[in-house]
Length: 112
Image (tube, rainbow, N blue to C red; front, side, top):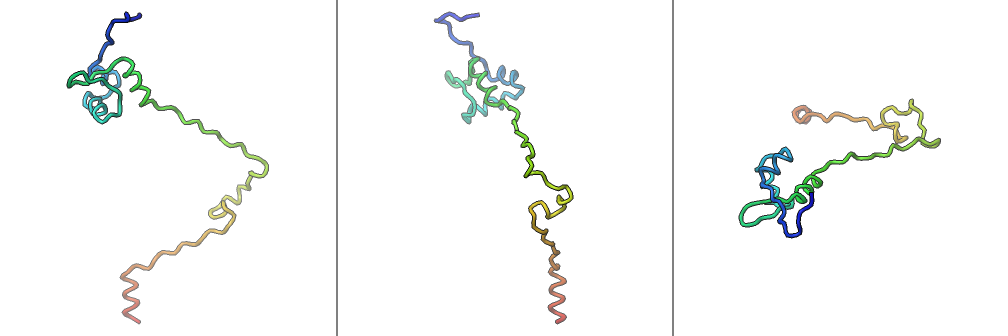
């Protein structure tokens, strides 16, 4: 269905756009007010063309991240027995020690 050259575009109200996007009317107006979505503002009211609604959908479109899984090569194959803690980098793991509580440290100083 083609529009005539002189025909004006259909303008949608924020309520129409909100219903199409599954958002609240407040959300649509707030995003337009902050300049995050395209809009037309004849007078004091926010209005949206079909092209702008399509652009809004594209702005908030989420695409899956394509992550290439590296294939192990002969030099990259590791012995699973060496996968223990601290052995991943080839150096021994540092031993962690708990800090002496302040009360115990003060009692040791008072006793000495």
